[in-house]
Image 1 (tube, one colour):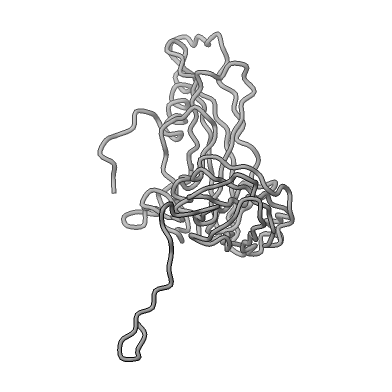
Image 2 (tube, rainbow, N blue to C red; image 1 turned 90 degrees about the horizontal axis):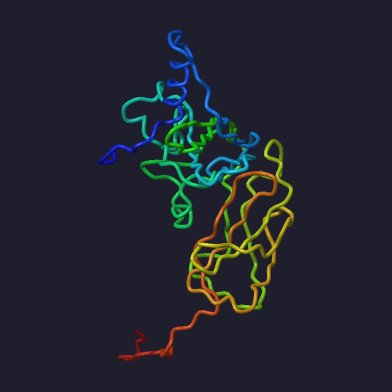
Length: 283
């Protein structure tokens, strides 16, 4: 299960090895760059429920970040998981379960890929949520992409997956359910012990997408994490591919509903209740 070609960047592990090697060289003269290395903050550590998607968001306080690119990478060693066990799988006890991806211009990454989450797929050949309690270690690397003075900055954070909570998931609306603009919609989700210690999520935000998951608007902010909330669909929210997203307040995990419809009609079609009978039997 390999890709057809290599990616032209160094993994965070390799960057660390290069830095360690350069710093160990005693011959020659070290000449520092005029500008400092990128400053990045990976944020605090979190405890999340098992079998649940999450998003990592970093920040930088540098004044000019226009040229920066970022990578979020899992830094767990794969030495204990070899052969068939080296690939990502739901109940993998140690080792990496998320592949490295090419640098991008924002310090944000969804785990797994957000389009997969929209499709209800949380495990692929390249990445998976964790279905067991374990630790996940991540590093955010920033590159300044300066040709004459290339530098990187990094920061680490850790996630503890709690086996006593999760999966955190939306139970309504269901796939293909019909909703109406300006009307109420009951949103339900499986709290799955996420409101209990050690996850301790007291409140959630509920968001609506009417463009197939490209953007989301908050329709209920900071509402109790009790598994049920009646929201009002905003007027003019017609959509053939809508989604509800429920995210933890003060944490990084979230869940997305299956696709549903708002104000859905089939143009030029009328539906009839057609009954055919033969010899007294109804077909």
